[in-house]
Length: 460
Ligand SMILES: *Cc1c(COP(=O)(O)O)cnc(C)c1O
Image (cartoon, rainbow, N blue to C red; front, side, top):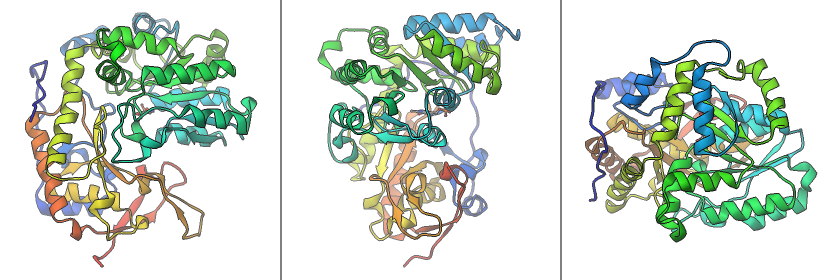
């Protein structure tokens, strides 16, 4: 198997523990079978998320010492602004403490009750922030996105026909903005092609609608464009990124992904009037406009990370790790979402547990089993995250896909760690008829998966 070659060596190490079988069992019960509740120290390989879990470079760590902690107009803000201007081409940057704060501020400013916000697929915090405004988060991804077996080079694309239909049905006055998530996290970390962004941007321009990119994984998306869209084969990642952002009016950014930092985010845009309105909310909720809920040192690491992530050797290794794990699993006959995306391998959970009804959360059953077997933490992206039911009603509305995501933190785990993960998944797959369904015992009003508690049902 083609092993991903690390373009770095290791300067500091962090020991990790492997808890005993009894400890793992106790941990699962105490956590209410919700892996978000498990103490991180009881996890051996943590693939819960690639968000905020990156290892920073020595250059970024050095930048921490150069934090200017002045309240207003600290020098690190200007470094960040200059970097965003160069990397993305947006003149204005508004720092926030993370991506969802950027979403919240943008939607607070633009979205009214009853509005409709199209996206390829809204990420869960994006959807929740749209719905919190009593608006509709509308998914317009191409049909191929929802078919786990379908190969498509740009499975994250938005369907232009679906966007046009939404504009026709709801009218432009009900659509305050259009979003495009690059790469499409909830659809499997799948890229969006430059051609698609250009087409969607054209429709938006024709109707006077602003287009914002959810740019959390913009560099990974640009790498796929370089690999898969022939016109971009000889362009650098930096050139591709500039062209991509030139098609949009702005972006929200979770810097915890492709800015290679542990905390941070921002909104970048061109419209000064809109920026002014956003800043008013920013001051109320996040902080002064030049720090937005972050320390000066965080702004510095973010600026440095935004440049590092454009390194093609890094991206080759990064996407190579995902491909390596995906190939190991596929070769072992395990159902995985294809093609492999940029930041994670997604197990298709339904074939693991045909004996479990969707209402018993088969995806979560797989995620629980992975922890029980190998202290590997993953995340369910299926019924537990997205299924809806009316209060008091037993009638559920299920999402089309039932996935378990193995997200790979950036620059953190080695090839041996990935081998171990593949072996753990293989053991679960071999014993899949023993997977146990789950039942909710506590359910919060939104973003259920973060704090829900469950109990295991007996094997039928
Ligand atoms: C992580 C993420 C967000 C939210 O960002 P946070 O920094 O976690 O608040 C939004 N959109 C996408 C696509 C993401 O992956």
